[in-house]
Amino acid sequence: MLEILQGAAYTLSLLFFWSGAIYFDMQSRKMKQDIEAQKKFQQVLQNKEFVKEYLNAMKDTKDDENV
Image: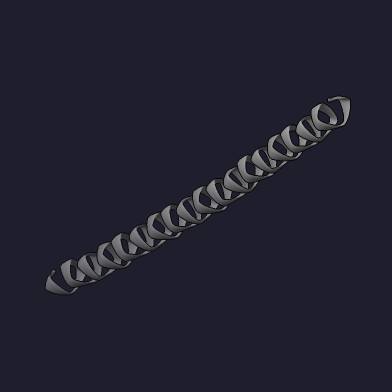
């Protein structure tokens, strides 16, 4: 009887460890994806700012030429 309980405890501990490892893997992948998405979003914002600055500079040069 004791051997059965020990076997069940061993099996449950392995199952608990396995499910914890799967959960940790899923969470770490999700965090990595979130970080990559934030980096891409920052790049898009920087590109938009660059385009706005460029258009403003071109607008200023056109205004200078017309004067």
